[in-house]
Length: 173
Ligand code: FES
Image (cartoon, rainbow, N blue to C red; front, side, top):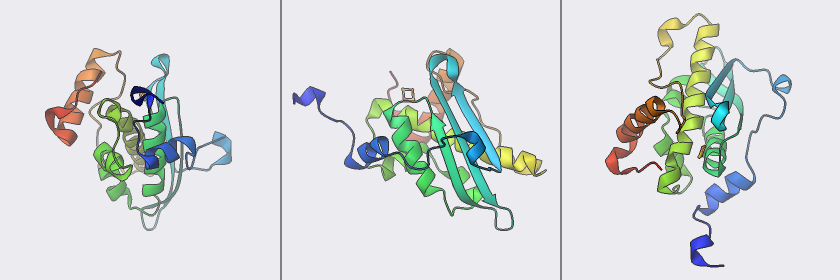
């Protein structure tokens, strides 16, 4: 195959894209304690992440997700869904897109923003869990509600977010 058409993803990222873990088939089949939805269905990039929580230990015991995002969003959220099981809610909340990209053996630079979708949907699910359980003080406000390249406001917030986690080298197209 011509090199310019060859895969640009790591073997691990390819595996998670082609065999995604913990995908939510039917919402009714999974009883969850928190649900987060991020993105904008109008432009196609939407992500839902649901979590089950051990209330005594405040640990994520199980999770599922589904998305209309691209290969990078699928691979990174599949990876995320494996990483968060057994983590405390506080630990899981701190996971960044950079952690996901590293765990996948890297992502193409112009696709790193896709891994933000899963991380943000997870945080929204954690906040939803806190909300449902009267733990308002634990809710940390997310800076952006949308991760959507066709919305200038969301784009600016996304740039700020990526700059914080990746430095100023990231170029979003
Ligand atoms: Fe929209 Fe990757 S999730 S381009």
